[in-house]
Each structure stands twice: as structure tokens, then as C-alpha cells.
Image 1: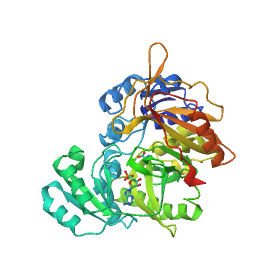
Image 2: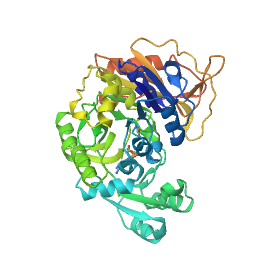
Image 3: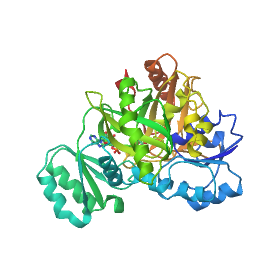
Image 4: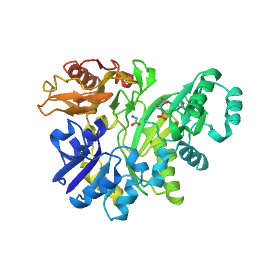
Length: 425
Ligand code: AMP
Ligand code: GLY
């Protein structure tokens, strides 16, 4: 089978790494890929959001399965376009992807269908007076979220009314997120333990993958700015034990599938449940994404022994109930090596060394990298590499492997957190 993966991050590197192991996959392409991805598959020079260009490539090259990594092409309706042409594609249609690209759609959907989430109000730029009135007469902390996609930066936690006023000014007056911030959600601040759970869905049925935990803040001990994710580990079965997982299935995943279908927005693909688990083990939805998480995918896929291509096909063609998920018992931890300055301004184009000195129980998934004509690998983004330790012995060993390898890799202005995975021990 000829397979195309769309995207260029660590998540897509992990997906192609796993798809390479499938006997079903005879030819593997990635658009646009990165230096690490293009070492193991055929890189295709088409941007991830160029739906027309991707469709043309798939038709001209007889691609039999397309796997969408990032959210932007889903919002652009890539799955609708491919499905119209009778092409097999893993991911949700545009109307179902609203669970990610409209926070207001997701919150209203959850409220309507009694799916546990933080209490909230929505406001629009057209009615500024109402929002200033609300934030002046409410309790703190609270969370302000841009309705649309904002590359993981559209969530601001406000500790007091001054911070809330400043945030609303930035969204509504300075328009820091453009149209994505013209409508906002203001919600209750939740406390507890965060976890990410991926359900692979076929519209009606689903399977769940092992839970993971992301580390979203730039600094150790969850301090500083929010990022796309600085590291993760899986399985996160202390946070999501058997009983908690049962509640997540019954209270979140099953009603999502049932009501998305009955409301005419059947959900296929990966439903990413970003959850807060409270003291009693009750899950609350912080957010949905409608694709795999990054960097969670880099630690979840190495724990799976069954065939990933088959999983994607079963999701796309409505037969996930027949797919038998098998796990290999591994523990995984991934540490993001970032460019100093991320998530704000950072420099790129720095040479990366030490990539050939990786131990056999580690994998380096590339995120922001590019190769040069003379064979060098350079930094090309904020998050540069995901150094992933894998061990059958336990999380502690996986963490040690990841950090032991992370120190051997170097580039100018390298930055990483030093506490990834510790909250799972
Ligand atoms: P999101 O992009 O929605 O995942 O939000 C980014 C991060 O903000 C989450 O991982 C949480 O750490 C935090 N967050 C978002 N919503 C809430 C909430 N209602 N209560 C507490 N923390 C939140
Ligand atoms: N790790 C967070 C995300 O993928 O959105």
C-alpha cells in the first residue's frame, strides 16, 4: 500500500517511524517532512495546508491512504475533499474537526450533551461592554480562550481582574490572534492532574490508546509560558488508572461519538481528549483536539505492537471494532530539545551534532530540522528534536535513557526542561 503522511513535526516522524514497521506499507511519503523524516521516507515538497496540491499529488501518484498529522488541513476540509474523490484518508471531516478549531462549538456541544467540562460564558468582539462587565464581577483565577486555532497559544490563565482586562484588550483591541480571537470563551479554572487520552474513532466505535501526560510550560515545575509541549511520557497509568479510564470512556468518549453522529457531525480519526482529573478521579474536558498530540504521539506509538496502518484504515473505513490493539509493555519518555527563546523569538540554522551517538534503546524524532546539501542537519524551528527513551523496565529507566541521550546532542542555544516524566513516578 502507498501511504502519504501530512506534516513536518515530531508527531509525524513518530507516525512514519511506526508505519515503516507495517508489512502493509510498501511505499511511504511525507509532505513536507523534515530532515529526520526524509532520511527514512520520500519527502514531498508540498505544504501541509496546501489541500489542492496534496490532492493532486495523491491522485497522480496512486496514494491509497493519507494520514493527516496537524490541525490546519482538517479545518480547511481536506478530509471532505479527499472523501468526495473516493480517497481513503485518516481524520475527521471539517464539521467534526470543529471540536478543535472552534472552542465555542466544543463547549456548547459538551454543555448540550452533559459532557463534564469547566463552566463557561462566551463573548464576542461585537459586545465588548458585556465582557468587561463580566470580568469585573467574577471570581479568579479564570481562563480566557480564543475561539479559533492559535498554534497552542490561545489559552490565557488570569489571576486577577487586571490580567483579565489586559488579555481581553489584547484579543479584542490588539487582535493578537486575528479573527481566531474575535470570539472568546471565559471559563472556570480547574485543578487536578492533567492527562491526554487518544481515542481512535470510526464514527460509531472506538479504541483507546495508552494515556500520556504532556508538559506544556516552558520551565521546570510547570512555570513560565505555555508551549506546544516540552516533553511527555506514557503510559500515564498513575493519573489514568483503570477506573478513571472507564469514566473517560463512559462520560466523554462515548457521548462525543453518539451525539456528534446524531447531530450530523460523525467523528472519525483521532479524538484527543485533554483532561483534568480531579481528586475523586472524575475527568473534566479541558479541550478536544481532532488529531494526534505532539509530543504525546512520540511516547504513545512506541508502546504499541499492533499494525498502525491497519488502525488508520479501520478508522477511515468504519471497522475499528475489528481492530485488535496490542501493546508491547514499554515505558516511554520524550524530552524536547528546543531553541532558546521558544515559545517567543528564537534563532534557527544552528548545526546539530551528536545525532549518531544515540543508544539502541532511544529514538530521536525530529521536529524543527532541515538538512543541507553537504549533509549537515540544522535547527529549523522552536521545538527541534524529541529525544525518546524506551524501556520495558519502567518509567524511571525510560526517563534516564532520554536524558542520557539528550546530553550527547548539541546545538547553539539548546534548551530543555530537566524534569520531564518525574510527575509520573
Ligand atoms: P489548551 O490549549 O486548551 O490545552 O490549554 C492549555 C493549557 O492551559 C492546558 O493544558 C491547561 O494546563 C491549561 N488550562 C486550559 N483550560 C484550563 C482550565 N479550565 N483550568 C485550568 N487549566 C486550564
Ligand atoms: N501536546 C498538545 C497538543 O498536541 O495540542
